[in-house]
Image (tube, rainbow, N blue to C red):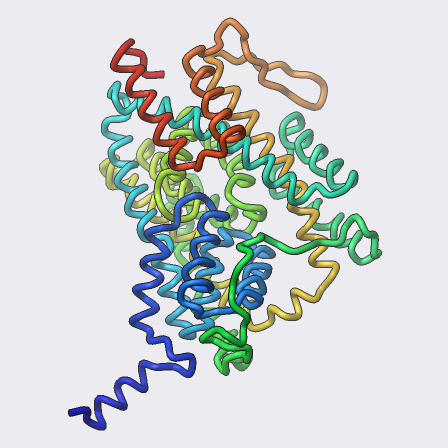
Length: 468
């Protein structure tokens, strides 16, 4: 027999849209477990489950949320999960959706980082990552083409992409400066009404979907999506403190030269400049973490990217590996593994905490942001500049994957790494060419290419004893 208490309990757990919080948690866990393939794949998974299968949110509202997330720094797929979770179940819904989205990847990357740190010089492990590097290079090149097709719609945008490539590859201009310059150019062009700077659309998620009226959330804006300014100030202040206070404490107590202080500042900076997706910012991370800070060697950056490509969660999870290795190599009074673990956790904390801040504070005002033409133009220009930055990443990867020896040539105003042709790595070149054919000619999915290249690396090692 159903009692009044049972009805009250069920009603409290049943919002107006009819989706219980418990049911939502299970669905977000499913989304997290299937979130392979970078942002495009992750967004497609969310669209299929939330729009097509569950019909919790309509097509128009889904794209509305996605377009806002594209305006923000950080991983747009994770921020989209936070946004939809917040729409469905207020603050706790956004927190659960966003946290679950990164938990599987965090666990996998931490385990792989331990294995890499302990056994990275073992032949089998080296052979595995030797294969991964070739596949990653092909995937990054495919990202250049994909982003370019979407964003370089006129000669001005092509010119901006070319300028961004020259600036970062030849002149060594920092990534944040390139993004800021692109945003200013786009904003001014949009304000002037120049047609070349009119931003558009966003990702194409799928051809089928349901209308907002047919979805569980409906067309109306939920009451909690129109919070008072006091709520925004409270949640914003709390999240800002969770992000910034640990950074201040570490720098004040350990000094700015300590590796944990450096990790906290470096990745906090990444959290506010990661426009255009993970591939764009990785060029800057590689430049700083390898060449300036000395946390990684060039090949190790590729190994970390291979880890992130083959595990669920945002591709930007590679930053966890970077933080791990940075602290592992400079542990201070801690054991290397303990320092590495803390370094990885710290990198993820300061990378993802701001994502919740952007959504919880900004989402209630998303309509004003979406209708701002100058802001849309700035986004379009940033995306064009990102093409040049990602191309720089692809060239940088290719040089270090395919050649064993590079010579630094310096001219007035810029420097350039030139490969020594006789040092070309023939096995890596062959494997990379095969990966390129698989990706571009046969459109084989990313996980299959990564798995095949890893397996071929192991086979080659078993036959020849060569591990890359």
